[in-house]
Image 1 (tube, rainbow, N blue to C red):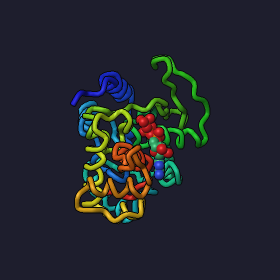
Image 2 (image 1 turned 180 degrees about the vertical axis):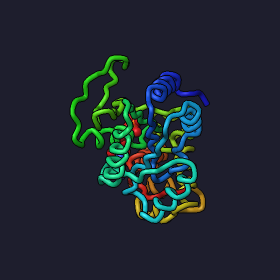
Image 3 (image 1 turned 135 degrees about the vertical axis):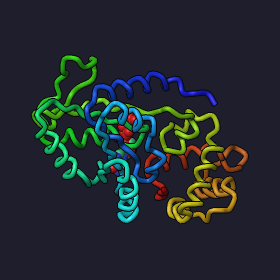
Length: 259
Ligand SMILES: Nc1nc2c(ncn2[C@@H]2O[C@H](COP(=O)(O)OP(=O)(O)OP(=O)(O)O)[C@@H](O)[C@H]2O)c(=O)[nH]1
């Protein structure tokens, strides 16, 4: 499959942010925490001596016990902050971290990196929303990038670094690719449904009111029937149904999660 055209540009922005930062916040999606961790970013951070924290965002979409279990597992390697940009979970923990960093007697820049749609901008906005002084551009930063002051010597780089080091299909399953831009939305929606059926089949019933079938294509068809998505001859519009399911996944409307 062809690599996305934006790939190189975004990769270079992510690298630039990484090299400008002293501390990295890698934002991951709590529903699919391990799939939204990026080993390349983590390796680079380590090699370049950047302090890495994982912000496990969207914890409002998963049970607390699941979030805690994942945190415990990841913390064998990297510190994790359980966060919800929608519900303010974890805000205090980040504030405590900022306070701790501010005690170091030097300028500290924090960069935010993560896959598309994990909530990088929402995390940045949440942090900006707290008592922030100015968001003035600083010398040395590329135009367009701004620094947000979180403490007298601690700044957040206001531009998130997007990780798109993978193929469309993998990104789509992470909820990181616009369904309309996919070459094979039906195939990918089937893969997603298969995964959901393996991990939390009740999510299909909860979201669409249909019983999942063993065959993901059949499940997709049942969803299309329930939504009454039809092509002109009356058949189910599978393509439209597939895109709807992928959008629901992106938007957090399907309550499935897995390790
Ligand atoms: N339920 C829930 N949804 C969230 C949370 N944070 C972000 N979202 C949603 O996730 C989607 C993506 O959020 P963004 O902040 O735009 O994510 P991003 O990583 O900056 O996305 P890109 O700009 O595509 O790289 C939006 O629909 C948000 O409303 C959260 O804590 N909980």
